Length: 65
Image (cartoon, rainbow, N blue to C red; front, side, top):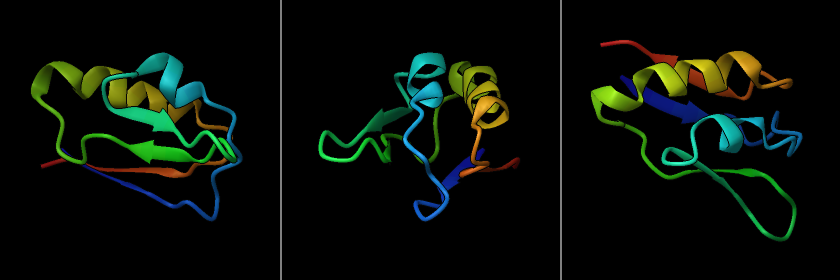
């Protein structure tokens, strides 16, 4: 799995951080998503997929390997 972020789309809702805090964080100054792990371990796949699904701005792109 490879994760990329479209920062221009991110609205700072923070849903990704709630669902997958090991993979995503937010910048303090504006709430924009910060990708902590672009290639997370298998145990984070399900949470990462869920984070992408709940993102209201569709800013999280997941490429399955």
